[in-house]
Image 1: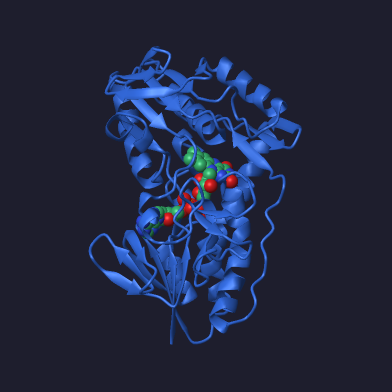
Image 2: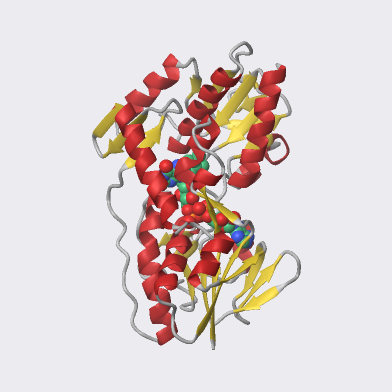
Length: 370
Ligand SMILES: Cc1cc2nc3c(=O)[nH]c(=O)nc-3n(C[C@H](O)[C@H](O)[C@H](O)COP(=O)(O)OP(=O)(O)OC[C@H]3O[C@@H](n4cnc5c(N)ncnc54)[C@H](O)[C@@H]3O)c2cc1C
C-alpha cells in the first residue's frame, strides 16, 4: 500500500480530496493533515468580518470532507519535512511517512520582518485566529476603548478588510466612531490592478473617511502606535497586517529547492524541482519562470491538475502541465454589499457585482459540503 500525504487543507487540496471521493487512487492510503479542522474560504472572509456571513457560511469542515471522500484526516501542525527519510514531522513530535507528499499550507503576512509586529500587530492569517481577535475588537469598540485601527497593506486583501471592518463597526457602534488608516509601502493602492479599479477603491475609501498613506514603510509597531520610516507616528489601538505573502519559515530546513522568497519551487506539473515525489500548490509554491500573484484563484485552478498528477505520480505515469492564466477576474468587495469586478482594464462596480460574488462564493463552499 502506498502512502500519500496531503499537507494543508488549502484551496487546491479541497479539490484534490473531492476528486478522490469520486474515485480513489488505487492501492493508496491517503491522509489529509491540517492544523485546523475548519478551512476558511478566503473570498468570504471580508463578508464574515462585515457581518454578512456566519462562521459556517465560509468554512469547510475538513474532517467531514475527508471522511466523505474515504480519506484519513489528522489535525496537527507540521514543523518540518525530512525529505531524505520521506517523512513529515509535527509540532507534537509525531511523524508520518510518505511515498508521495503534496504541500498546500498557504502563506502568512511577513510580520517577522517588522520590529514589534509579531508582539503588537494582528496578522490576517491564520484566519481562525484573526476571526477571534476581530470579535474582541468589536467588543472594545462597543466599550469605547477602540478609537484607531491601522491596516498595513494596500493590496486587494487589505482594502477589502479595512472596508469590511469600517462597515461593521459603523453598524455595531455608531455612537463610538473609530478612525481607520491604510498604510502601504507601494506608490499606489492595489498595484496589481488597473488604474480604473484603483480609482473606484480610492473613491470608496475617501467616502468612508479612511485615511491612506502611500510610499509609507512601517519601521516599528508599538502597543498604541505605528511608526513609519519617515518618522510619522500614527496612533493605533489595533494594527492589522494584511501585507503580501511570506513562506513558512520551516521550509528552509526541508532541503526542498525554494525560490528567492522561500516558497517551494515547482515545475509546471506542480512537482518540486528538486524532489519529484513532493508536490506543492497554492500560495506556498512558485512555478519556475512564472510570475503571478499569490491569490486563491490560482490555488483553486491548480486543484484539478494536482489531483490528476498525484494519481499519475503514484502510478508512475507522465505528468500533466498546469498553465497559469495571464489575467484573472477579481471581485473586490467594499464591505457594504457593493463590489468591483476587476479584469485587466475593466472595472465594474455595483451592488449586482456583490450579489454575483456572493453567488460564486457560496457555490464554492457548497461544493465541498456535499
Ligand atoms: C482578507 C483576504 C481576502 C482574500 N480574498 C481573496 C479573494 O477574494 N480571491 C482570491 O483569489 N484570493 C483572496 N485572498 C488570497 C487567498 O487568501 C490566498 O491566496 C489563498 O488562501 C491561498 O490558498 P492556499 O491553498 O495556498 O492556502 P490556504 O487557503 O491559506 O490554506 C492553507 C491551509 O494550510 C493549513 N496549514 C498552514 N500551515 C500548516 C502547517 N504547518 N501544518 C498543517 N497545516 C497547515 C492552514 O490551516 C490552512 O487550512 C485573500 C486573502 C486575504 C488575506
